[in-house]
Image (cartoon, rainbow, N blue to C red; front, side, top):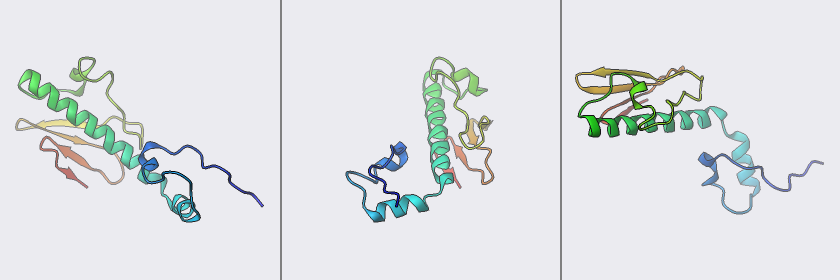
Length: 118
């Protein structure tokens, strides 16, 4: 019979839930964990990083940039890619506000008011 002595290192998105030793319940929760949730959480984190960089740019220049490349290297070292599919996030300006979209099967968008649409 295979016995797991120690749990492998968890990604930061899950580690806050599991402090100390793991019980059988915690293992069962991990086995039911959907990997898509992890990638969606990472995708949302990258969208928020870009959104915050856009807000910083607006504070410094008085308007949002015409493209995301204007954030590099002053605010971001590189434009993050969507971890779900490895593509870049969609970005457009609309009446002085920005809209940032991911390219997944269930698209989400982040607006300049930081309203997330599922």
